[in-house]
Image 1: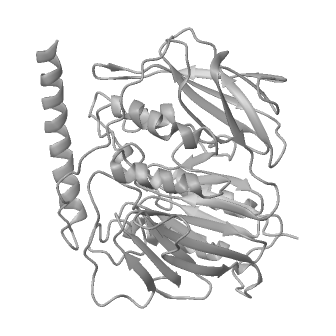
Image 2 (image 1 turned 120 degrees about the horizontal axis):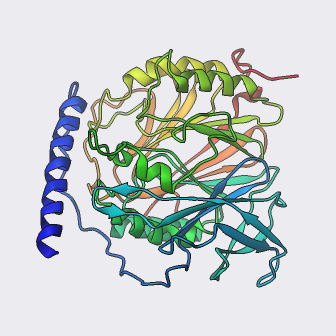
Amino acid sequence: MELKLKIIRLLLLSLTSILFISRTVRAGEEVEYLRPPPRKAFRLPWDPKSSSQPQQVHISLAGDKHIRVSWVTTDKSSPSIVEYGTSTGKYSYKAQGESTKYSYLFYRSGMIHHTVIGPLQDSTVYFYRCGGEDPEFQFKTPPSKFPVTFAVAGDLGQTGWTKSTLDHIDQCKYDVHLLPGDLSYADYVQHRWDTFGQLVQPLASARPWMVTQGNHEKEYIPFVVDEFISYNSRWKMPFEESGSTSNLYYSFDVAGVHTIMLGSYTDYDDYSDQYRWLQADLQKVDRNKTPWLVVLFHVPWYNSNEAHQGEADDMMTSMEPLLYAAGADIVFAGHVHAYERTQRVYNGKPDPCGAVHITIGDGGNKEGLARKYKLPQPEWSVFREASFGHGELAIINSTHASWSWHRNDDDEPVRSDQVSITSLIDSGCSSVRVMN
């Protein structure tokens, strides 16, 4: 058995090395970026549970006034039910969901359950349990009106830095977590998805986590494994609820914010399903109801770091005009393991009707920070720093928001970068569409 495991590890290591080299060559067309050596991973001790006990519990938004509860059990016959209510230990409601599982070479996942509950009251604490088993969890639903606060951190992984980021986020008061790709850094080693689910459960079971895919979610083995089978099986997002045909791109509303999650690693050209879906989704946006328009994807369009230069040029060429015409306010990305904030920008130049772009791929990944920036600093780049941390977007009302970035090296109340942002809704930008 030991020999078999060693052979599997060697095969996966060889395959990962080949894929990594090919990615590095493609990414280096403009500026070659060589990653630093991997850093020490955060080892979460395995906590054996009964076969039917829920593990890796996390929640996500699933349409108006509904929440999707996701968890894993080793018992394949465990029911996909969620009991919930507004008092601890008293479950007035019950919902039935669905379950799935997947195989990846010699790995067999547990039973992965997804159950949608609701309708739910806004700004209300609910107590719940999964599969008819303890322990009891609790979450708070987001508000239906301003103010609303988002915690934002990408490229998390499973390191000591990750744990520090999560500890900082746990100290802030937020309603929804936004993650612009690169979750577990499992990188083909499937049990790392399980340990990631265990690591984030304390936070992800208590507030909705809305995620999109990054390059580390791609675990494609030609002719053997679909590229996003692990991610799609474990982290189901409200794509069907938002008219999308793919879990890799979708949208949702929170209070007065319409948030669009795009896929950097699925087709995005003018003839793609994602492009057509984005066009249709933007046409439905009513800026009277959702005066703020926020967008997330993995690979940044505006990036003055030497890492990953030019990788998003094609996506930017295709989709930036759509977001500009719709009056997108803020765009979050990850991928570059550092922090950067721009002024409002469009087509490579400062533009008062463009979006503020924020790269926040500094959540704690195993590959370390991207410390080298291009000089001179572009005129659209306002603040940049290679440190681990997270951000908080507090949208106060229909016109004003506050953004702050918090280094892990500082105490949570310390704001290393802070700016007030005014929505384009009252900016006079003629491209902003307001439905009457």
